[in-house]
Image (cartoon, rainbow, N blue to C red; front, side, top):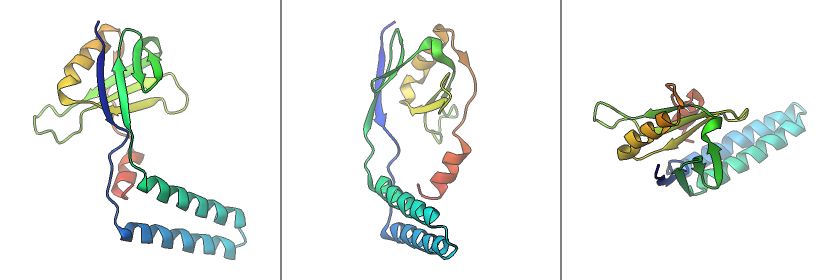
Length: 157
């Protein structure tokens, strides 16, 4: 088997207006003040810290991530997921040809934390990835984007 390589952005970058940052600041400030009024200083500090981190990650540019399917398994950046540790996979493509759905590869691993990994793929690679995974006797199981990701996306994150 020859290796299959592709690169994609870590996440889809979104432009946020000044109003988004103002709204974040107002929500964090009022929530922190309310927490202090009720005497919950630890929660107030936690809110401020989370607001600062959220603002920082909102302006951070996504990195390019390198993916590789080779004889040993799936390599994401420098981390290798051997085929033996991959429980199932799903290649999501829009079969209608309209390309409303982003082509995505879902991998369910044996990891306890974050067992489902999703990664963008190129539309033309979908059949090759599907064939490689089936040739390695990995079960095909339909998976979708997690609901929390859809909620966060609708909130502008």
